[in-house]
Image (cartoon, rainbow, N blue to C red; front, side, top):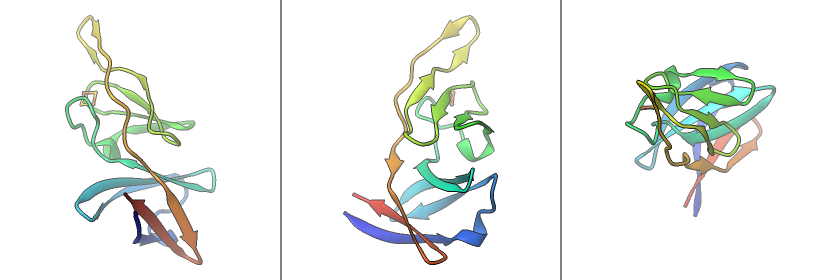
Length: 109
Ligand code: FES
């Protein structure tokens, strides 16, 4: 496992999120309530772009079919809705973050 610099804190203001390509992995860094979180940027259902999703409290909702994930853990909280069907989907990858001075580092295993 290794730490890679992803960004400077000022690149992701409070209440925002941004995708970074780190060692070939698309990582979504989210800054809410004075804390930074890092999860996979693509929905595990059909690859929806979570950076265009809606954040509510500490969850993010996929813009495509509405799957909901926990931002802190990457766990799937609610599956996608497709017509009358409510499906299940896998958890997102959750990345460990280290903040050093003004820099954000992501641990890639
Ligand atoms: S692609 Fe995200 S819920 Fe379907």
